[in-house]
Amino acid sequence: MNNKTKILVTGGAGFIGSHLIRLLVNKYPDTLIVNIDKLTYAGNLANLKDVENMPNYRFVKADICDYEKMQQIFAEYQINGVIHLAAESHVDRSITDPFVFAKTNVIGTLTLLQAAKEYWKNDMNGKLFYHVSTDEVYGSLDHGGFFLETTPYDPKSPYSASKAASDHFVRAFHNTYKLPVIISNCSNNYGPYQFPEKLIPLFINNIRHNKPLPVYGKGENVRDWLYVEDHARAIDLIFHKGKIGDTYNIGGFNEWKNIDLIRVMIKVADRLLDRTEGASEQLITYVADRAGHDLRYAIDSTKLHEELGWSPSLQFEEGIEKTIRWYLDNQDWLDNVTSGDYQKYYERMYINQ
Ligand code: NAD
Ligand code: TYD
Image (cartoon, rainbow, N blue to C red; front, top):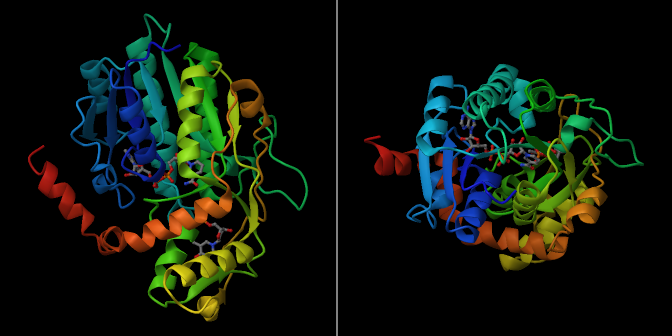
């Protein structure tokens, strides 16, 4: 399956996509990596500054809902593999505006599937449409048990409902048109370049600025955290070695109650900021709970470990310190994405496209 030499990555200017692009562009110098991204508020070309001039990398600003543009890109670059990450990804935004989630996550995925199917219809051999999904499609767990690849879908938020719908379309294209597909469902990611609307970067930024840390409900919800580079390594492995038609769960068996995770972040950040350890605990502010807040996610990634030999490389303590250090050292990045200045970077770079 190693013959996919022209890979289309969608959403490559986002958090996970930028780590994946960095890995692929450096690891496979003879493979063309075409990044298409609409550059929504979550997409930022500054995330890819270190690879933007690599000879095997191309960027195209495009919306995955634009069928003609997708057709044109498949033909122009003779795409033989897709890794699809582009999505609206934040649960809170999905509660405020579910329509854009249905549009990008469902219609966008369907548009790409159709473009791939049409472009590959005479020869599906050696092609692959890899869809990156989330553990949130499985719903919410109580205090025991794990999500398995066989766990029935039970999405609870507009975000997870839209991701679940897109997963169903991917499987339907495999069943109906024999499109070669793989899906992976990963737990919560953390690491550099995550937009500061998500818990970890938001709280690091707020600690830095002595702003309140808004904890939803009692802070007792549980998430299973994986360092983003370990997710990117898993995607690379599954893309090249995974079984067509299969699903792989990705997670590090690393569950944290929100409030416990927040206390660890405070401890590390205070140390790195030369504050008295625990001084920032006073910033913790309990606020109204998220509507329909999923209690617990916990993924069982035994299949990926046993079939493909993947394991996370970083212990959580190491990963969270590395992450906090990165945000504190890259305050400019945070200031840019929070002020909207990163759009100016794009205009400077691509104004004439
Ligand atoms: P992100 O929000 O950081 O990035 C999404 C990217 O998609 C952005 O660059 C954005 O500009 C782009 N995009 C959005 N709409 C687009 C459109 N219509 N056309 C083209 N590009 C568009 O998201 P992320 O956290 O990097 O997540 C990437 C993927 O991984 C998503 O599919 C998400 O569901 C999945 N996932 C995320 C996590 C997580 O913890 N972040 C966990 C599991 C799975
Ligand atoms: P988030 O990073 O939004 O990821 P997801 O909802 O997809 O798991 O949130 C992680 C957890 O942190 C989740 O239980 C909601 C909680 N949370 C807060 O308590 N306060 C916040 O300001 C945010 C953004 C999240």
